Amino acid sequence: MLSLAAALLAAAPSAVAATVEVHGDAILVDGKPFAVVGAAGQTRFGLLKQLGATTVRTYGDETGFVLDEAQKAGLKVIAGFWLEHPRRGFNYRDLAQVGPQLQRLTEFVNRYKTHPALLMWGLGNEVEADVADDAHVWTGIEEAAKLVRRLDPQHPTLAVLAETGTDKVTRFRRHAPSVQVLGINSYGEALPSLPDRVRAQGWKGPLIVTEMGPLGQWQAPRTPWGAAIEPSSDEKAAMLSRWFSALQPKVQGYIVFYWGQKQEVTPTWHSLLLQGGEYTRTAEAMAAAWGGNTPQGNRSPRIALFRLPQGNEWNRDQTMRAEIAVDDPDGDPFGVVWQVMAESTDLKTYGDAEQAPPVFPQAIREPGPKGVTIAGLQPGNYRLFVTARDGKGAAATANLPFRVK
Image (cartoon, rainbow, N blue to C red):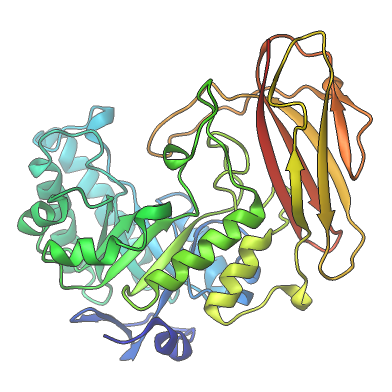
């Protein structure tokens, strides 16, 4: 098995459509080993490349734009085509539904197959979610993969599963032999064992972790009222470093989620960038693993301490003081911004879009670089967010859930 590090050295952009081949468990681009390391997203590809990434993953949105921007940055693209989900009413046994989807896929492949940034075709994302009998889903993916291989033999097919289950990969292999690269979405403590779990179910081709993150909200510890406790950006960076080290010798690639800003439980849980485009310490972890660097080597502020000394529950007539200790390893001056947000109640599964909860600026009293006072809130569940920015494009984030009774 070729190491990811060696393949990273061999990766280079091309101005013409590449021939991408699968040989055993290796991915070759124009005959040279290629390491698939990068992120899912649609923004700041120049920065992603600078960190050492080779690849960006899409889900089916804005594919033409992403391919063009990725090519400018010297990145390859896993071009995702959205296969509809049975959990949303799609029936893979109904030709009246399957036929138009395959026609859209035909048009999609023919439109983009000669693009020089194209690496491979990503057929669906967790299509099997919440399906008791998944055989018809795998058969539907097989039909899509056969079609793509006929239309474009120069780029391999990839399908993406939500974790491995006890025998999910085995069932998938049985029904979808035309899929050449297996993608698995996995998070947190499940990541180190993922390659062995996949291989134990008989998959011998290339394996890419098509979504990974420090910790899924479903894996996190919770408050007594059920709020998931989010790691700080510093803690996320440390987790990512561990997962990168565990995965790198055993997989052909991994994609970090999400290169951009996304509301999922909170605005920061899976967001590798802030809304203003700032990166956090997670970018430093990515650069260290991929042989790249942050702009001018700039490092993010560090949140060494963030706590609620009075506890995380208090009565509505009380005020609460939060304490924080922030430093910047480069000695850059930094600004600290505080925000109170309601605990999200629009919680979805499988990454479905969520509405951001309301914010309460009137609750912020006496904000400063070392703490803040919170007062004037009605009973309910909330989060206190803090963001430290260094003015050079880097930031640190953290939040704590609390309850007003």
